[in-house]
Image (cartoon, rainbow, N blue to C red; front, side, top):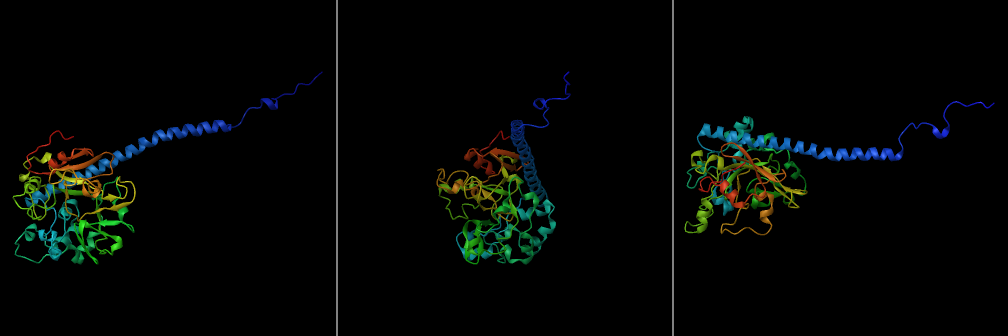
Length: 361
């Protein structure tokens, strides 16, 4: 009689793990799920960053309204002697202080504002033509002011951007319209790191937002354009809220507060022209206003050519895909497409051009 052996034969033994093919299938499924999930997570994070950016712009609008409620006028765009545009010897009569320092007390930054108010002339009337008081100095000649210009104000940075990435060797520190360096004055508001810049100018807190000056930051009179020129009216008709040595009132915004840009996002400039790599410039929070000029058309009504209008430092721009967020004069915040018609932007920049833009969403 044959004895039956209990148990399974080796050929029928139960498996105790995955085969290589099964493991690869599981990994592939997980990779697909992750690839589907990551864009949603990134989109949610960008939505949160965009909301925070919108809130920053909202706070700037509230600060301006509180400033206007206190002083019955708006802060100036920048303190700048008009003669400095053409005569470098007049540059010592310029403080180069822009809009943001005036708003510091209304952004809960009283300690940062105190050195400005105690050391410098901050009244725009003192810098207008034929002013009787010649005692005007660049902001960086005051040690107390220099002590705070490098402080970063969190509410002035868009969380989708990193303006501080410009602060590296070989890049540019975009500060004010003109900075005097060891090598002499520089046009365009920036100094190159390889041109021996003033150490004060290279140590600025940065901003992702700038006030709107309208068509140009200077008036036709300041630029020496005669009243008989067609360009004279073209410039002055599109004056914005923040102007050199001027402090406008909301009553002057005859186009309507909800139809006029107060602040917009800015990024600076990048090597590739698409805000991808190689950041070249960022903006200091001491900077003056941004004009709608390069975003629109030339004074003769001809669209700009060449590379200059494509630079992000010449117009309002953002790191949000497809949109730029703006604070309007009524304090609301609107996102406009980057493909918004240039003439519409021009009309939104002017406070009294009479060309109303309705239906903003």
